[in-house]
Image (cartoon, rainbow, N blue to C red; front, side, top):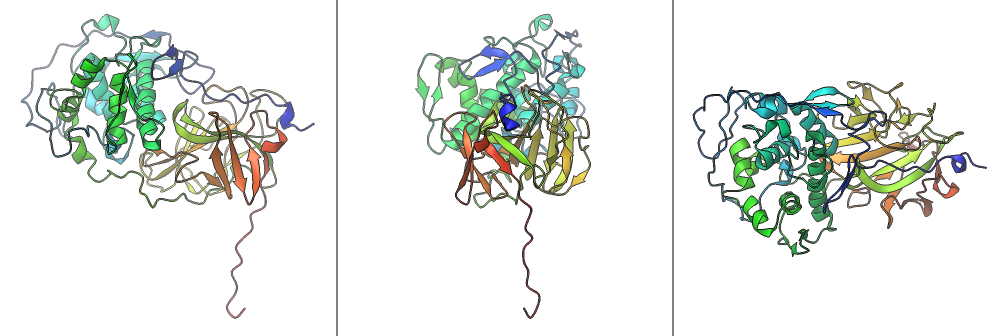
Length: 474
């Protein structure tokens, strides 16, 4: 019997907290990456510091914090720029963690507010007492959501960025999601990231035709509405009735006006990045993520990019196993392309293909469930086909040792079966009807994703054939 047929089915990552909403569900079994450290045990409630003397208000349209400032003005309601059509509320680059946020530092921003959130900490099982800025940055990085947007939503929903909540000792539901089981800061941020992603990628890929409300009604955005705007519309629709929704999205007095007061005109911030994924973009040459001559199983077709969040951007592969479950293996995950390792922690390895050291720019590869043992550290350059680490169950909820890989470009998760298909050594990914169904095809041959590693899912990586370049005179 095949080794794969004796391996346990691979159930991939679940959501982070066990609660449901109109936007989706979050499981309570984990706060993030490490399956052995799940949940949140307690939350710190530091007393709010006395408010600082109010500084001079900035000119209309100027951000409340400049790179050289040491204090911050609470936001005031001032008219937003009307250079664009009123129904366009936020550029795509301010929703995803894109190049527009390269110079933004969440910790520095909060330090200048002298407010409740600037001193707030939350106890996470993985990192212990963790400052709010690090919690926000972690959710932003893992889900590729712009930290500026997360901060602005926190301020709009709970007033915790510039002042203190009405009852700091009962600080919860910071994003306003009172119906969620997880009302801690981390849980609310993850919920927000999921909802924003559902709106953004649903509209971008055409799977979302309208914005649903709890009462069953639907708002249908104009066809020229950008995904960033729909992400906002979708977010507030999960929390409000139609009247409150319209108030929140009012460009002159609602959330868009607050965003501009906090960070400046978002359209100016994104002026050089309105097209995050160019139409002419193509995928670099990528190879299968295991050694030549080895046979692995294609266990999951196109599915969510990270922690059940984002578009169907990821593929799963599993090595042959003599035992069932999360068993250490000597099999190696290999780099599918050349690039610099810029993040290596908590089961995650991030490879920067354009080698500028930034996760928000250009092509980036996510390798998930990489064992801590022998894992390539950040700062190392790796060539295509070189060792990254061993597959495992680290980095999320999993019932069997495997690898999860996905692609980003300029902070946007790239669907595996889209305009830029995921192709590995000529094997092209195709999505199936179910969330992890799918196939890989090459030269008329088809491999069918199977979580039990059935024979039809097994792929043997063939020896690389160098190109024949004739010598002069031949």
